Image (cartoon, rainbow, N blue to C red; front, side):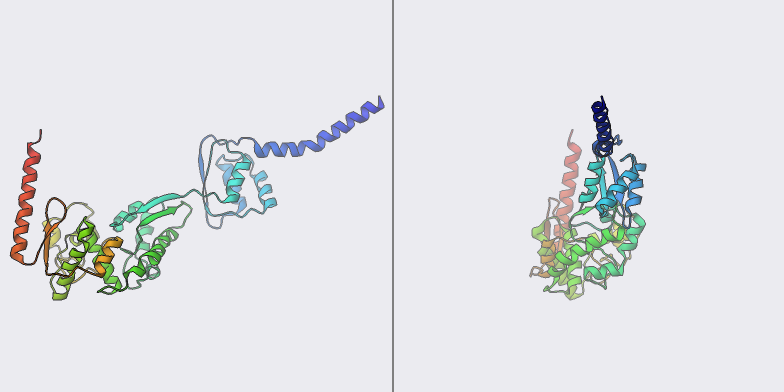
Length: 339
């Protein structure tokens, strides 16, 4: 009888000693309270206490206190970023994701040919509009890109796919773009017929003037010769850029009013190059601007079927313009006959 009582006491003591670890293991591994996927941002300077309280408040974990105990025991170092947690994620799974720094990134594509307004739209989920335009005019960021004389970041962004998250500061996002430019684009601008920044501007004009990369060098050649003889460039895309810079954000083909509008970006009304690039040029456009095609062409006009007709003289150019208009009329009439 006495032996039975001793055995029961030993069993009870064993259970008492085992219950806390068992409870802890169960609390650690059982499914969490989260009903649907949730995202938590760990911002710069956030503490373990703040993140634990946020996780509990957002319904990701049941006990902030339990998480804090674990974090202190493991000396958790939080990595700033955006973390996504699956429904019913256990405390063990939540903790492991934070410990390993499994940050969720969003790919954002900044394409060749993009101008300021395109870049702003692509970054709108990461950089508030007001902050974007302030940073776009940052002298420090322009200096980081390698052109301290630039009045904006137009053209100073590398075309690429960027991995961003929503815990990033706006300036950090913009810095990533110009640092990529400084590494991958800025060195390629050396060694051309024009200084590097003027090469970048000329490349942006060629980029926006034609969709045919094989024409970049020929278009750049026309503009380069016009620069040398003091002839206005009369680049249609600059008249559009002037429209947008003036606050009119209609994204249409150039109108007669655009061509005639006095503006420092409109190369129909100013001498020489515009003050900044008008877009992000591609690598082939940059190479074309560095070495414009030699020749005697001084004019060009669209064919209406892709590409351009080039001409040496104004009478020849006027004939090409007439051919272009005739082609456009033919296409309009053909479109009208379709059922």
